[in-house]
Image (cartoon, rainbow, N blue to C red; front, top):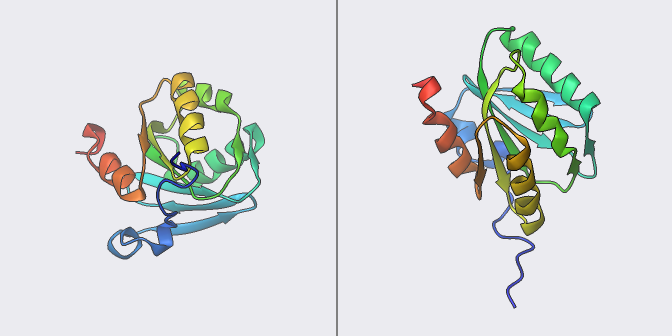
Length: 147
C-alpha cells in the first residue's frame, strides 16, 4: 500500500524560488503569515490553528488596508502545516464586496486534498487544487483577470 500522508515536500514561500523572483511584502498575524504580491497573496496558517470567521475577518481587514476596497486579487493557501478550516467560509466570497476572484489550495498531504475537494464544492469562485507552490503561482499568474 502506498503511503499518501506526504505526497510532496512542504515548500514554505520564503524557501521557494518565487521569494527571490517576486516582489512581496510579508505580514505576520497571530494565526499565520501571508505574503502580498502584485495580484495575489499566499497564506501559510500556523500548525494547529482553527481558521474560522474571526481569523478570516482579520485577514480580510489587513488585505483591505493594504490593497483598498476596489482591488481584486487571487489567493494561494499554502497548506504547509496541519490546521482546520471552516469550509463554510468560502460562501462569504459569493458576496459582491469580495476582493477574491480565484484561489488555489496547495495540498502536501492526502488529508488536505480531501478537504480541498470539500472546500471547492462550497465556493463560487474558481478554486484550483495544486500539488506544489509552483503549480499554484503559475496558475494564478495566468488568470485572464490579470493579463
